[in-house]
Length: 472
Ligand code: URA
Image (cartoon, rainbow, N blue to C red; front, side):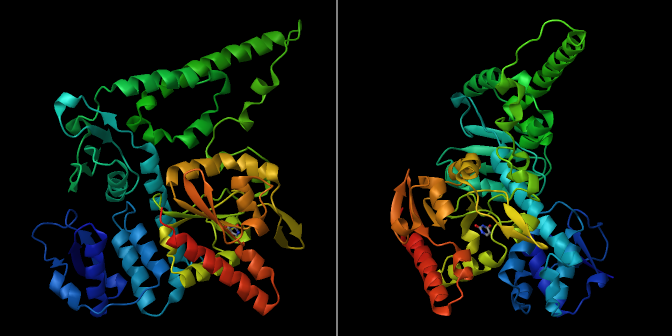
């Protein structure tokens, strides 16, 4: 058994993995350890030097596999390096199934990458900076955060791009990121919250807590929705997190009182009128997309399909709704329309990893046709119900250019009166953004005539080129 010791980072693993491949070391014969796991004095083989790594033969992996490996490398599991090496080894042996979610290793790889991406989104959503007293000097803002996976560096890049020249520090149990207004510095070592003094008084925070207390409606408490929307593990990093347990237990106390009142009420007596809105709170209550009940589409869908892509993407591609495959996989544009869109993006020189892909409606609407589930166009009411989530994405992603694919996406922004024929290929301002309207890729797929189909694809390509050429 060969022991290979690496720094706990993707680049170090990649260099060592390429070297191991060059030596034809089968996965079962390699024991991957990080410096922290290696026993001192043991005869470990060090990872290759930079020079050796540069000399190691390169292998070509698909762009998708490269992204999966990179993302999964942040998954918190000490065995991940040996697992990733097994994936790479199988690929190098010509076993392309390893990159498919239908394969056991492939499925695990997808799951790991997805979990890491979720942790990245969580980090953006749940890091709460507290402003320090100006007399203390830099950093002006501090936050304590406990990510599920090793996403500190990624999150730090995000905040460095978003917070201008403010100085800040994010401390986590495995290290800290510091930004001095110009440079980002990462420090990797185990830390305690108390060490970083992130628990500082903040006047704005006091206001926020008062506000949070005032909007918390005990009569509408739905604990599982609350925990899904704001998972308990993040509470400790959120100012309002400290308030929630007490608010919830007070609300439960209230619920008990109501229950008692109901049993007493059942004994007979005067009927009490209840406001219908209060009696059916779930429909409008703020929930996470995964538990959304704003319309009825969730009932027949496998899951809600979230948008995907970098949260600082300049271009957002807005489709209609997930299709059959998207519904099963939980990712947008992974079926045939997605493949056509991918080809169009390639022709237009737009990298999929750089755009944010989403849909006007997040649940698959379908009707049975034999054994198949046939796409059904969502009603405008459903589009409007779902606009709540689109609004959040428009706000969080901040894309400057939106490409609408098809009539439903266009109507989601401009209302039903906006016709595709009047907008196609045009640039239209929308709030502080620019919208380029084009056809939906499945419209191209439905055309039997080869020339007509190519013309539609060419129009989609042109719209993508136009979107990426816009100066915003
Ligand atoms: N069609 C869409 O509009 N969106 C998808 O995600 C897939 C197909």
